[in-house]
Length: 251
Image 1 (cartoon, rainbow, N blue to C red):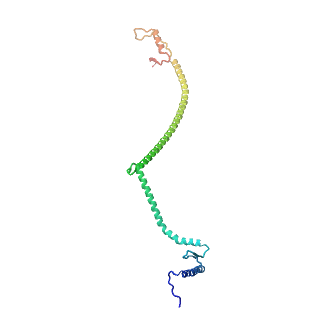
Image 2 (image 1 turned 60 degrees about the vertical axis):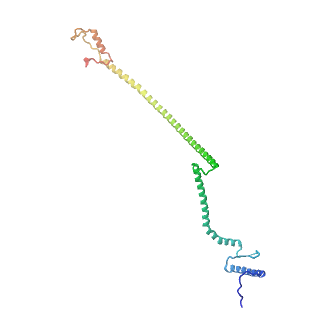
C-alpha cells in the first residue's frame, strides 16, 4: 500500500518537529538549487527556524542585490499607486496653509484701514500703531526725497535757461554793435553827399537870381513916388540867395 495523505498541522512532538524541519529544509534548498540550474532563474530562499536560526540560498553571488530587486518589483508598484493620494493630501495641506495666510493678510489689511479693531487687544493695537507710524515715516521720507529730486531738476533747468538767455543776449549785443558800425559809416557818407548837393544847389541859385537893372524912378499909378533906395533894397532882399523866394514877375 502507498503512503497515506499526511495531515497538515503543527507537529506537537518537539523531536519529530525538528526532524521534519531538517528534512524538508534540505529538500527545499535542493529544489531551489535545481530550479535555478535547470531553468536559469534567479532564486533566493530565506528560512528562519522556530529558534530564530537563519538558513538561506541565493542563486546569484549577492543576496542583497536580489532583495533590492525584489523590493523594487514588489513595493515600487505600491508606492506608485499610493503617489496620487499622497500628492492630493500634500496639495490639500498646502491649500489650507495658503488659505490661512490669505485670511491673515486680509485681516491685517482691514486693521490697517481701521476696520475690525474690536477683537484686538491692547498689545495688538500698540503693535498696529507702531506699524502705522513706521509706514507714515517711510512715506514722508520718500515724498521728501522725491520733492528734493524735483527741486534739483528744476534748478538745473533754471541754470540752463539762464546760460541760454545770457548767450542770446551776448549774441544780440554783437549783432546790434555790428549794425550800428555799418550804419555810422554810411550816415557820414550820406551827410557829405547831402552837403555837396546843397552847396551845388546854392551855387546854382546864386547864378540864377541876379539883380536886375531897372529905372528906379518908374512910377505906375501911385501918388507917392517910391524912392530908388526902397526899390533897390526890396530887389536885393528878394534876390538874396538861399531864401527860396521867387519874384512874382518871373512866374
